[in-house]
Image (tube, rainbow, N blue to C red; front, side, top):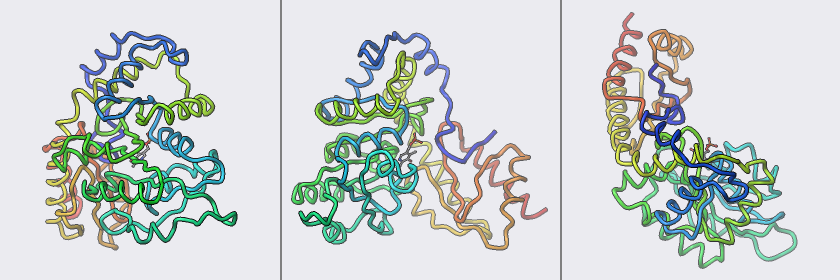
Length: 337
Ligand SMILES: *Cc1c(COP(=O)(O)O)cnc(C)c1O
């Protein structure tokens, strides 16, 4: 099957599986798993942080970051479209007693500093305490430039806020910007990174931060049921992913661009291929198209896509240039038959 729903559908390659089965493991709740320890220390060093925490998912890594930065009754500033506001079940409020203060994202995915400034609460018992600014890069496939991130660092310092990055796809950003990952990560007090999307590991995310923050996060991870035992089998897949699977994200970006340009030639889709910077393509579909029928026609031909307005297509290591040609041919066939 050609599955374009998400880059979460990636499966381990044989080389990654080999790394997994030969992993040395121990009980990570005792701190005894050498493969988890190796991943955490390698990742901390690579991204310029004191330490790191291996988490079960990106949702967990973000929640732990919010709960480590904020106390009950604090609030965090984030984008209206932020994953950790929109798509994580309201976890910060539900489990952390932390209030989100969303700000409308600008069309490029950034948050306007004037609007952020206006949303910071004065020190007054009427208000929650504004503690943290949380950004996301990439956001909806868009890359936030380094100059903005550096300005966000200055803004956070001037306003005594901590700064978190939901970097689920931060490697897509560093590849698109053609800069070292550290240039991005060093702007932040904490960063979460998904290992199980474009990087191709089966499970897991990292949270990076200083020792004090990660100690707190580690405690909350146990409370939330995320203390894993012989997790080294998974951690070794994550380390393999970080050490081997990053350069090939370039191919995903090129394939997404090819897909965007091809869709743009079809009359029923509307998009601007120049807006496709990484591995995600959004395309508006003409209103008279029966998407259920289109999706089911494609499925009969071995292609899985999600319906939506716009439709979203995501490229990853299971999608080749030929797969996209095959998809486009079948979309054309559907509309001409
Ligand atoms: C996927 C994603 C997450 C959460 O990851 P899960 O592993 O699915 O919980 C967080 N933030 C962003 C931006 C994501 O794309």
